[in-house]
Length: 226
Length: 226
DNA sequence: GAATTCATACTTGTATACAAGATTCGTAGC
DNA sequence: GCTACGAATCTTGTATACAAGTATGAATTC
Image (cartoon, rainbow over all chains, first blue to last red; front, side, top):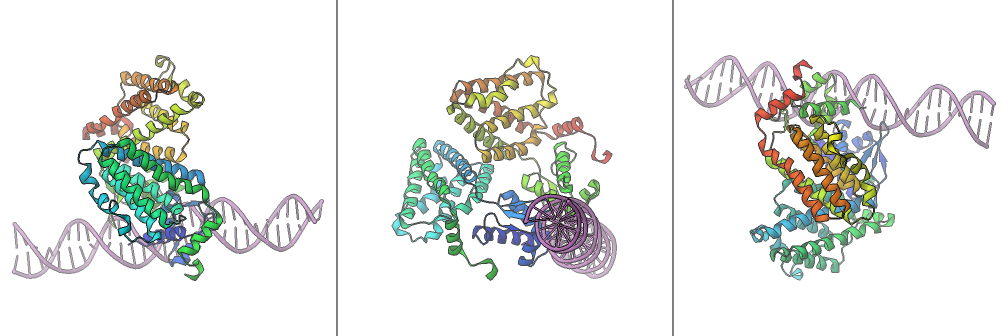
């Protein structure tokens, strides 16, 4: 793997785990020293992150971790709803939808109580479900855009805390959506799916500094100790 | 403006004007020499173009202008249809849609014969119309994604040749869509809009090497003469 | 004490040198 | 004639040096 690629992943992890906080300013040489690399691969990584929407560059004046913006996240959630509902609508019209959905069904339509799931893994598993939906569609570009949108939203999902009740609900909702698609009930499927995503969308307004600090401690140690 | 930015724009122009043809292989130093710059800004520009979907890098083995792929373009057109129809649906539900659409109406709802339009500018003008629609929506992220999709499609639009008949049709279709939105006729607006975009979508299958060579001559001189 | 100016340190932007890997083409061996 | 090998050449990947612009803070002036 490239050094630039490594730096890119590490930086993203640092941002996701809130070792680098929204609003933090930093310089290329600072990162380079921490990563034991030169500025060249660091710059490459940073420009990728900028296009991903995670950092901003100021002309000859350093970088900043993109500050949180409710509206930004809400708009992205709306795009997610739009894309996923479109795929669901199309699936409802396809005759081979049962085969295409087979993988998702085996994961989500069993009794939830039979599965042991760590609360911290739920966000990851849930994401897999929605990626899976897009994979069942037949539009690679739509899939790529959806992936990009989810990627940008991942940082807010790191703030979610999943209670057992919510785990159960996630399973229920996913299997309900799948069964609606299987019975070609397009309107029920899209309605349930929209509601399901809106649960996450509504958490965006609840972001607080305290919440971020909490997540920071949950996920990792301090940057200086690393 | 950055040198990297300049190189980026110039390269994109070279690709759009078919001075660099789909499938062409090239190296960083080759571009650097042509642009009178060092490899550093060239690399930055190339990596941006790669993320835009215009070029591909091969590990320590040069670059390539992304070859044409029908399916790729068709899928992007479908995303465009989805996004634009969504905005239109929302507009139909907004009470202040008349004010928001005012700008577009003044451009497109006058008698087409009163306007003199160069056939080569039609693709540009048409794009402006669709950007304008997204601006009327209230989702900046959706707008950005739409812009990115249109950007990727721009290269195929360079192959369109607009006959006068098509210019007239473009005006008719745009004004028809606008009037449908103004009368809150969501289904007519989305149906007309879909048809309108599908006209472009259908041209994708007609791309031939001959067509590309033709466009190349239409747009510009040879790279070596520059 | 407040405003201003200028030097200094710090930032990114760019050029260049070198390292590491891939390809290509000629040559030796059969 | 065909295959295998290897050196030369080309490619990108990375480190480093320098250029250009920005902010900061101390000294100066009022």
